[in-house]
Image 1 (cartoon, one colour):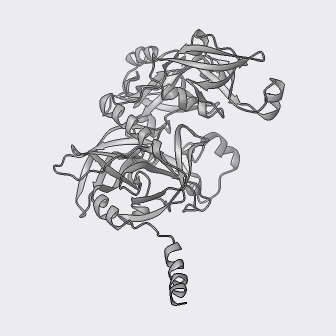
Image 2 (tube, rainbow, N blue to C red):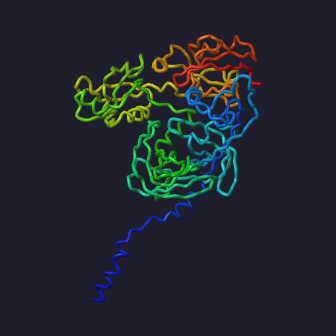
Image 3 (cartoon, rainbow, N blue to C red):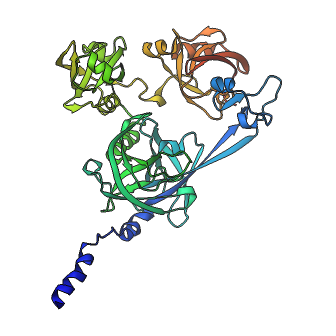
Length: 460
């Protein structure tokens, strides 16, 4: 009886699950996790809707101007410089002072400050940023900095314990934990990242911080949260460290990220479309259009083809295709299994380079206009309903273009009533314009055209 009673008392204790202890992980890793703050000096020549005379502006104006509108005629713009700050996290991954974080944490920053463990602050240089994967690399000048060990995100499994360290709401070195809820998640606006979904509590300020496995290795970079309130709701998303490290290495070596490109416009295969194509299930990426002269067109792809596999990897949804092609080095050949006219066949295509690779090397005259531009593809022109123009890749936050409200992604259609056909033509046109002349500029933003007055300056 005594033995049986002893066994009964011991059984619950033996069966009780043991939760992981993160204390050793935190002691070892926390010194290499940093707080990042940025500032940007902007000229207040644009007015927020909520600040426009204290009145709400009609919705129709929001459609044209987004969150900010130009000052009304006769209203003198307030050009006082106004610093703006943001808070995020990051971590040191190289002993030479290289720090990984999110691109959105440092976007548009004129000054970046990194606060180390012990409240020591260093000014950081932006080595490079890639908005498509939301990865950025910073560099600080310091010796004997602690670093984090990087793991393998390809080994992760759903249900695995993970922990995050960051600066939510500015509280340095806050630790949260949870499990991996899913892997290879594709978010609507981020088709190049197979996100790690977790239930780890991530809040504003955690962005750019590391996600750890139980061995204290970094397996991801915390990047996004799904929220309706602005705070944590139980769905957090991290960039796999394998993806982030590849991007970081390219940023360090080249200053930009090179991606594979087919030059195809795709759409999902719905249940009805699958039935119309004689497919047993809805899968793959349906080619709706091809860029003339693009790698896809030259390789024999056609509108109406459904791409089912890339080098043996299934394309279960249309959003999977850009990631699989994007991670292929330009110049490499890929085998595509496609469905065409009711039959499956394999087509080999040599992947090209994504047109906006090396935006820093794009052409233009950043001194006189404060912009850097790139050519428009014929597919982009058709989508926007225009036959000429150049894409604005970068805007100097202190230049005349920024003061006029011009943003990256706008299309410059004409300058001084002269149609712009190419970056070279824009540069030639600018050489013939005197300094301090104000010219009308026609822009296209998300398919809508409007004019702004832009002063041509010499950078003074």
